[in-house]
Amino acid sequence: MPKKLKGLVKKVWESKIKQQPSKNLHISYSSLSTYNKCPKLWELQYLRNEIPFTQNIYTCFGSAMHETIQEWLTVMYHDKVKAANDINLHKLLYANMAHSYRMGKAMMNGDHFSNADEMTQFWLDGKHILDFLSKKRAGYFSTKNMMLAGVETLLYQDIKPGVKFKGLVDLVFYHPNTDRWTIMDIKTSTRGWSPEYKKNPNLTAQVILYKEYFSKQFNVDKDKIDVEFFIVKRRVPAEAEWASMQRRVQQFRPNAGPRKTKQVLDSMNKFISEAVDENGQYIDKEYKCNSPLGKCRECSDFVN
Image (cartoon, rainbow, N blue to C red; front, top):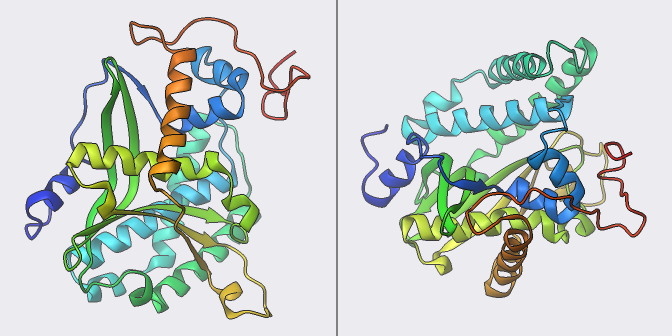
């Protein structure tokens, strides 16, 4: 752990290292999101364990890009900018993609989920992203009045007795000049998020939950916490009417105020009331798809 971190920033940094007890049922954003989309799919995946893990090139690339950016920023903020500049990010991404591929293949019982041509194309796309980030680094990740406080910060907090929320925050920054915090979630995308996609409440619930439980875990006023999706784009148009369309980064800061937070927490409480018993265990019953047809596009591949 870097020696220069002190106080609450040090506590946030250390939370990625500590192993929390797992006796209680814990609910993640992914679990809640799945239930909101389709209770039947949630039943098959989380209660019955009938949906096998599947890896694909998008998740493989996403994991590798996450790790590459996190490693780069850790060196930049906790060592020196020059040391970060000396990192061969292309090679680092290549190594992280190879590792992600091996791990995914092992979890799929040795089945291949991509090929050399596809992996190479995604790596080339990733090189363009990293070149853009390196060139524009100061605009996105200033080392003045901005500290990297957390990487894969573990959140583990009570929702109710016997039930915990569990989440991993990609990046946490602290701004000492304003005494504010930024919770950042990295996303990889082909061409960025459209205005309609950004309106999906099931999507933005992720960082709203992170803000809620980060505030509780570290006793930080919610008014001092900002949330952001940091979206990196594999493809940008060669010619565009607006210069912003050619940027490899899209920053999206959703509304995470009291009204939106209440909506998300209400959906969490609804999920718990429908799927968790008084002993803090999932209720073993048949859950129905939200579709009046009995199947939706989420669960149709798994329901007879």
